[in-house]
Length: 383
Image 1 (cartoon, rainbow, N blue to C red):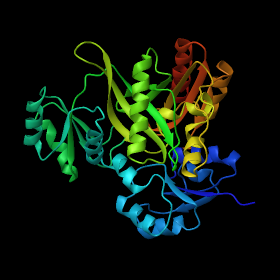
Image 2 (cartoon, one colour; image 1 turned 180 degrees about the horizontal axis):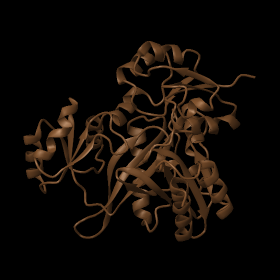
Image 3 (cartoon, one colour; image 1 turned 45 degrees about the vertical axis):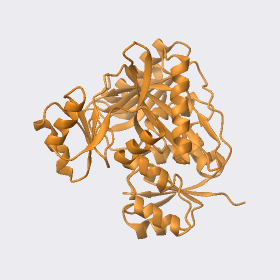
């Protein structure tokens, strides 16, 4: 028997969980990892250690793969175009992925599609930031480097022209956006195959702390049906119009119009499995990781139906050194809450670093959320 070979560029926790999802499907999985110690490199048997920024390394890695996909968006766009010209199947392709790589390109295309976004434009220098602020509600203004940012990195809140100098030191274009007075953050996760089949998961609430995802609540509590449908429609439209193949996460702001009615604005796009979809491993009939593999291999999509009325995922961050080991903490956690599902990534513990996540399912959202938050805090702090 022969099974498809999926090559994933990147050896982080997304690759680790994608590999796990592919095992029951018989998929042969290989990764291009920065180091042998990366999260996925610890568990995948077929590992190439190399630099994803080097085209010849990418070419050698892709040889023998049926499809190439990613656990991050940092592979140079021009390299992906070269791989496609070599006949390598790249999913999502560079024409789609560039919208997740370059925030300026993303905003311009979403404007063309009529997708609601915060007011924005590329700015040239700190004085131009002040002009942008004056064109709207004034300071503060959100500044983002168009490439390379994630988890709050590459993002600044400028409250004056003096504050606006730092982003320009990176030497890349800077995008200015109005600072949105939002009610909460949401995420719409969809998956699309090469021939256009697409599925949507329930819209979730994403709770951020210091620019990092802390908790994901599925489905988003109290979200009006029409707003949920609008968010899913936006995500499916973006996936179709950008020709995305694989998983697409559309991060959104829920806002209030002047008349008090709710609306959504698109914040960011990610074209890979996403932190806001980790809850689907236990909380949906088909996880985002299996769904991504189905899509890039052009298999029919799986069901996105939730497995419980309330699902909460809480990220586990590295705590301060000392105290009991993670293994000891697991013993105590499982004794206190046998229903908590733990995913640890095998990463070196550093304060503030994502080292795992916990998912809890149940019927009552209040109790499910409390259990998930308590479990994550216990694994982080040991108390």
